[in-house]
Amino acid sequence: MRDGDIVVIGGGYAGVRLAKRLDATARVTLVDRKEVFFHRIASLRAGVRPEWSVTPFIPYDRLLREGRMVVGKAVRVDTGARQVVLATGERLPYDVLVIATGADYPEPARFTGTTPEETIKSFAGHQRKVATAGHVLVVGGGPSGVELAAEVRLARPDARVTLAHAGTALLNSAGSERAGRRALAWLESHDVEVRLDSFMSPGNDFGTYRDAHGNDMEADLSFWATGTTPNTLWLRLAGHGDWLNASGHIRVDRRLRVEGHTDVFAVGDVNDATELKITPAALAQADLAAHNIRAHLRSSGSSARHRREPRFYRPAQRTPLIVPFGAADGLTVVPVPGGESAVLGSRTSVLAKAKTLMTPYMRRQLGYTAT
Image 1 (cartoon, rainbow, N blue to C red):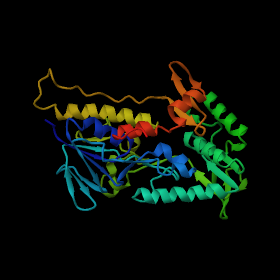
Image 2 (image 1 turned 120 degrees about the horizontal axis):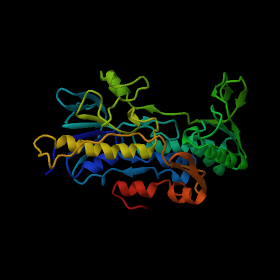
Image 3 (image 1 turned 90 degrees about the vertical axis):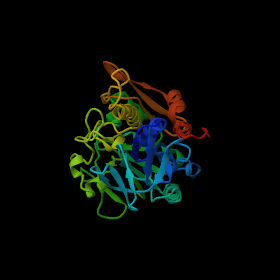
Image 4 (image 1 turned 135 degrees about the vertical axis):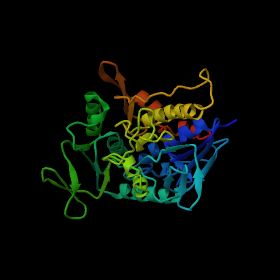
């Protein structure tokens, strides 16, 4: 027997993981504006290489055996009636609500429009521009910026490629100066011009850019990999602005519940539980929230012997990080307790992520074969 109605808003990495975890024990409804899962990890390469255009899209139809998928837009949460209101007017009752709406990423790592066809068209536009640009500027020296600069360079060995980063070292958040130095060495050895301590903004004229020192640069094409924005505007418009912190993230307690609401959880990039907005953190939160939701649903009427105790989420200060340099190279940062993180080379990085960008793994998660 399945206990309770669970509505999960958002079918990204955290939402998919949590919905699958609870499918056998509760009546799960997964709501997303997209009709397919968007494997964002593969999107940077898809924005550069035509043969990867369709790779990021995986149907939801095999994810849930017992639950259901609803394609729609959530516009309001009625906490009194315990219902999620969709743009169509449909109301979805819940015993537990999970908000997993993620964050908005800069292009090309963005699902553009509402259908795969619209996003594939957007990918094709980026691919054409990359193929013809004389100078490509990538702004941002974090994992996404480094990965994208490498993809552009490998796709266009004849073009000028510049990576501009506001920090004094690449991969600042990796917890390893060695990782930043290795990324810098790879880029420079492949003739990518790397500008550190170079905060960029659009210049006065189209196709021009200016750094904080007043230096101008011209480029035919630019990509910005400078951060994300949590998808919580709909909550603010619906009158739930008090759920959000100053950056727009949902404030949660140690059990990943929205502060002040024992039956509403928030997981993944959308919450304020950790500054590390990466897929492993989202998956870890989904697993912990699934446990706590089971504990919540079974807390009443269960004997002490069979009652599940809730768990607290402890944000990881450092977590493994893989940065591909195309399909055949990359680096992997592995935290070492009490010391600087270890940096592994291309073999580990290629096997773990760079070659396939974890596409077979995500296909299996959604009930499909790896290929």
